[in-house]
Length: 198
Ligand SMILES: [Zn+2]
Image 1 (cartoon, helix red, strand yellow):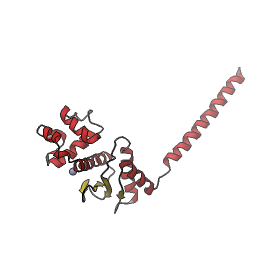
Image 2 (cartoon, rainbow, N blue to C red):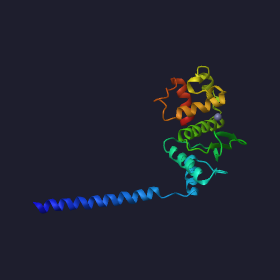
Image 3 (tube, rainbow, N blue to C red):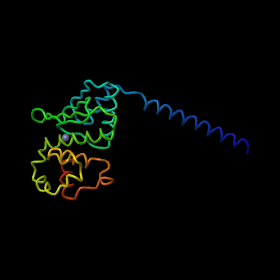
Image 4 (cartoon, protein in one colour):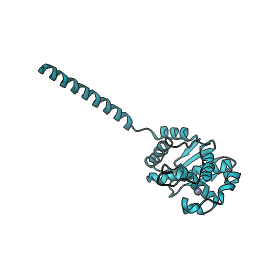
């Protein structure tokens, strides 16, 4: 009887050591730092974007921003056929730049404030969507525009229609949409969904 117990104890000790060993090696793999170049390649792929520049931003800071974009892209699809360039800049806010034709570029702030970075990314992607689909020229937009309550979205949404559309995309794409952020009325949601998810 005693023997059986000792045997059982040894077996669990061996299993425990084995499991710990596997977990440690998995952990070591997960923590192995990726090069900035590899991270850039992964972000380009995830967002379907051709160029990334991190001019003037220290590599370690650019790494945080790019790593966040990559993680964010796993919860939200940012792939867009006309986003060509992302610039990580020493700026306090995001910016959307439309070059000739459909060559669009977004600038993102060099920040470790991840909710702000998430919002900035989605807002700027909103401008890309608006620009390439001419969303604000559509009859769906014109049909619902009159009863959009800009104040319920954000203060910035009241600036002009261009910012309103970008704010609506950021609002709809937020993980808080339908939770702490009240959903849009049905027809407005339908219009935004069409541009966000198609
Ligand atoms: Zn904007």
